[in-house]
Length: 208
Image (cartoon, rainbow, N blue to C red; front, side, top):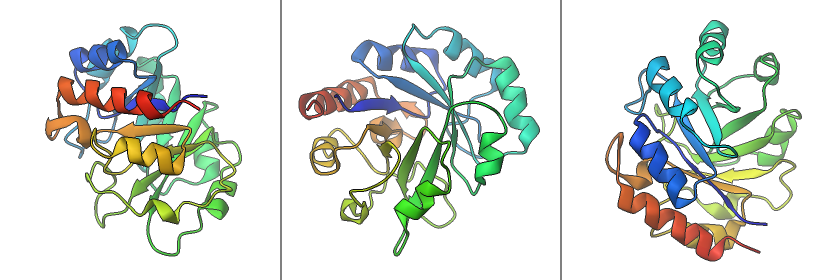
């Protein structure tokens, strides 16, 4: 098995194509309007329709009204939904789409119990917690907080960069890693060299 790679916060086609060229398994498109990495439905559709087979196009939402998600699904050919807020399992299940649920890691969080609340999820994404921010903080969390018996495929996020992702993969052995700000030169501006370096580091250690 190999550690899969998602490059998130994609809002330009050339960034998506570069990520795929380097070996990314998935690209993430953010539909959260307050995010600097927000993509309009028009931009998202162009990106999603340009992806080759076997590349997963993930749409990220955060406490969005149901109709916003349904509108995006009508326009953009998404393969997977990512819910990054306080959405309930009932909310996530209603779209009849594969989805992953994010959990922002803070002290005393019970990862196993949280994952069990979302039995239909395809995976659980663990991100760093920063008050007032939903993600893309560039901050890591203590990977020792992650239990060994998480009942869903584990996606590791939060402050990953080309410099630390190899250590993260070796320690956590996640199903996948997810990066956004760690491959940027500034918020929402992807650095193609960093994307290439990040993916090479994961590929170097992420096969077992």
